[in-house]
Image 1 (cartoon, rainbow, N blue to C red):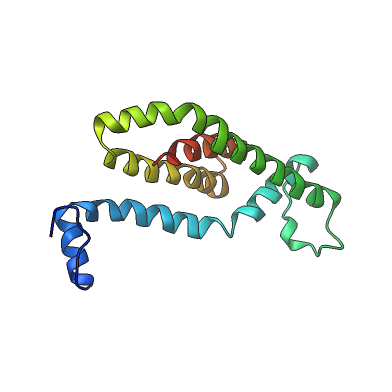
Image 2 (cartoon, helix red, strand yellow):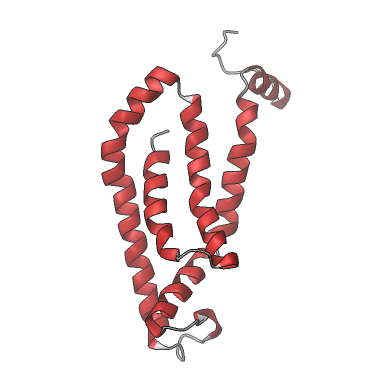
Length: 160
C-alpha cells in the first residue's frame, strides 16, 4: 500500500493512517468549528431578528416572546432586514471575495502546501461564531460586525 493509497481494513487502520500522516492533529480544530456552528445556527435567526427589531424600536425587544399575530411591526420587518443582510454577506463572501482571493490563495497554497490553509479555513469559520457569542453574552460589539466578518471569513475559508 502506497503512502497516499486509501487504507484497507477497518476503523483501526484508518485511525493509524490518520496518526501517521498527522491529519489527526487537525481534528480538534475541525471539531470546535463544527460544534460552534451546530450550537449557534439554531439560535442565530432569533439573535438577528431581535437585533434588527431593537434597532428599529431604539429599545431592547425579544420578538420570540410574541405570537406571530400580536408581534410588533418591528419584529416582522426585522425578519426582512436579517434576510437582506445575510443575503448580501453571502453574495460578497461567495462571489466577490472568492473572485479576488482565489488566485492569491491558490498560489500561496502551491508554495506553502495545503494543510496550513485547511487549518486556517477552519479557524476562520470560528471567528463569526465568537462575534455572535461576544454580542449575545457580553454586548461588547454591534452585531453589524458579524456580516463583514462572516463575508470575509467565509470567502477566505471557501478556498480550501
